[in-house]
Image 1: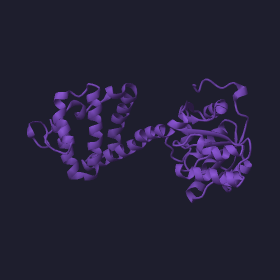
Image 2 (image 1 turned 30 degrees about the vertical axis):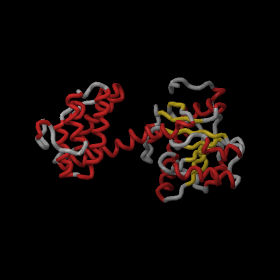
Image 3 (image 1 turned 45 degrees about the vertical axis):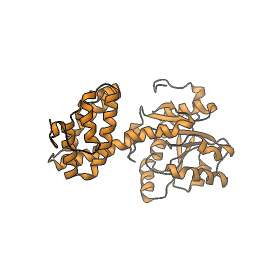
Image 4 (image 1 turned 90 degrees about the vertical axis):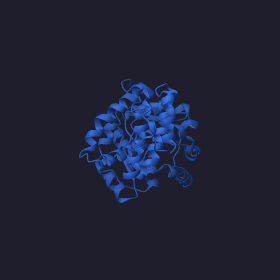
Length: 312
């Protein structure tokens, strides 16, 4: 459903009081976006000084109270705690009677679907799993980034319209994910986004080591183009020495990485092997060039013609 396709008024949730349990980077941003849509944040809980400061900055004048009090005040409660803490939190809230019948209980974990909220469902709550596929900074810019952001949505069929309406009101695009597919969905996002940060950080460190004074400025256009090409064309966007079968160049890379940044070698080899496999499967890497390349990636440093570390 496009953000331009507003839900029918009868399907839109009423203006709701909103509470946040867990004032990390995600909860306050979602509550602030719901506030822009006309809902009213009324309570937030946070443990650390950082989370309290974040709540005060993102949701000024909203009182900080214990989690049970958040549920007592709010019709829509955002449970924005770390994945591992979520099951225990839900069970604890249900066991203590904090959950009220008819209360919308929303978690934002990518890993879990709606079943993790079953203890609250048995207490009469309405369970929704709404995971924004976005990285958050804990600053007001996060609210702007929600515009057009996809949300992985899992909910009972009877709550489908309510879930879609809430996502659209936050500026997002609902993408339905089956309960049993949530772990795979989350693994895919982590593989792309989290590992990308590691790769970029390593690239910047290596460029600094090589004497480049502004590695961010050098990488920005290159990585932006690579990402755009990959999203448009998938494996057909592969370029570089692995896809070309330049075993000598790859050997030279491995030699230099071992000399200057040995901690990056294992990651380089693993990603190069995965790249070679995909390039072979899609006809980009010629089989006759693959033998030398795979030899290098298996741990050797000898490229074409036996020249160690010789770049073409």
